[in-house]
Length: 81
Ligand SMILES: [Zn+2]
Image (cartoon, rainbow, N blue to C red; front, side, top):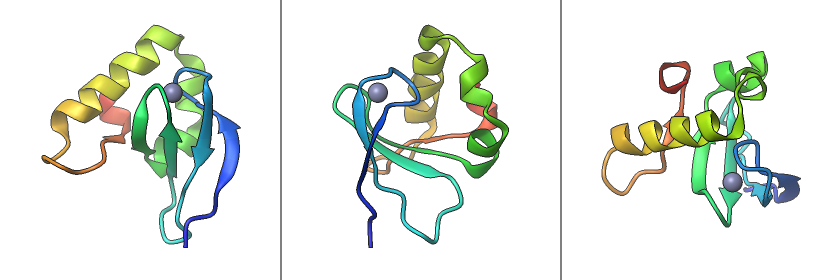
């Protein structure tokens, strides 16, 4: 079951929801600005997104979208940063 929790988007700072399922060790975010995306456990736990400015975080999302299979939610991994 998704566990809905209001947060600020770790990419753009807008109001978003954490919809992570318990079986995933990263985070799944639903943001009105960025859309739905996953952040890998490695990126999340190391706080890698916090080290980047907003534009670089959004660039990482664009790269993740580019490598996501069609119709799949993009996942931001350390390769996208
Ligand atoms: Zn966002």
